[in-house]
Image (tube, rainbow, N blue to C red; front, side, top):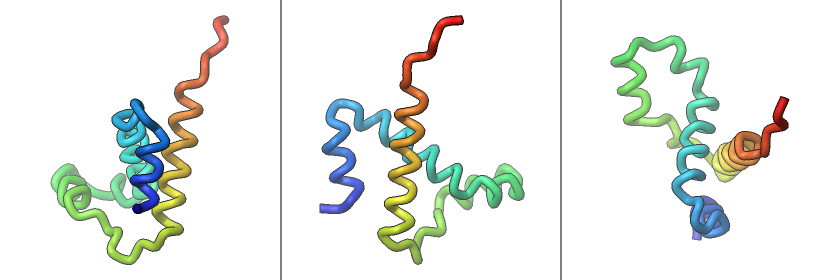
Length: 80
């Protein structure tokens, strides 16, 4: 079982939310590259993400970023 599948199982009924946060983590990872492209370049880039040389380290870092984002964005906000 892959690391992603473990995370999806751990998230139970919030898998859809986790997938969205994981996608956001990928966008954060390549934000500098994406900012340098025009719309068509962004679409092409996103259709073929440069993950061919990724190891478990890069996947784990993206998962950690996704979990961090999900926890931070779902914290109760104090009312002011």
